[in-house]
Image 1 (cartoon, rainbow, N blue to C red):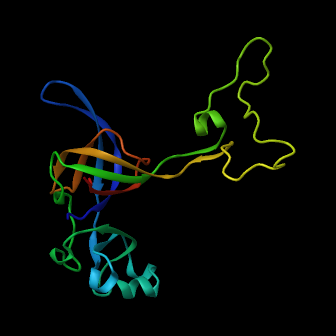
Image 2 (image 1 turned 135 degrees about the horizontal axis):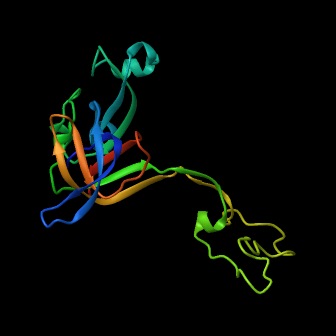
Image 3 (image 1 turned 90 degrees about the vertical axis):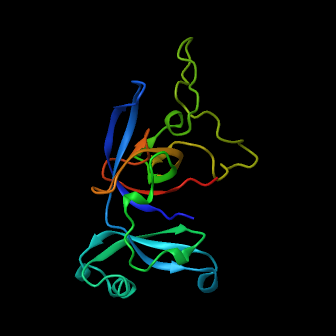
Amino acid sequence: MQGGLFARKVGMTQVFDKSGNILPVTILKVGLCKVSQIKTVISDGYNSIQVAYESQKLEKLNRPIRGHLKKVCSDIGFRSFGEFYVSEPQNFKLGEIIKADTFFVGQKVRVTGRILGKGFSGNQKRHNFSRGPMTHGSKNHRLPGSIGAGSTPGRVYPGKKMAGRSGRGIVTVTNSGILFVNAEDNIIVLKGSVPGKINSILKIQPQKY
């Protein structure tokens, strides 16, 4: 199974296909991604590779991370790590650099990122609730309404959908198609939108079928 990588969201634009239709696209810039650990069923109970990204100076990292990266690199360090499940970990080498050309045009991928934070939001915005009537003397326009019985149980059950902080969750978009891959500049162009704001880090991996 093919591994994945981490990329930074540059922004969105639009392109024209062969039929003249406008397609919204997202441009991703792949940074330096190195295989920092290879896990197998014999040693760890499952097959995966650990990919290090977001390069950082070695002197700015703590000793455990520097010791972990000792076999991978000696001149530059990494401050973030992520795992990808693979079926054949023996096909990867420790310290191997994963570039944009690990994917190809037309391939379907899964993109995971953290969505925008929306701050404190009401029920309508946070949970897509419907509002009350706006006329005929109604005073229940955007109120939450009843949140539980009075006597029994005499409290509000945990997990009740109410107003609160919205956004900042981790979301995965599936079946996102790759329209363009530039191996020289490490750029990937995806069709449509993906989670996260500009300059946010996204996790890209092959689509599971």
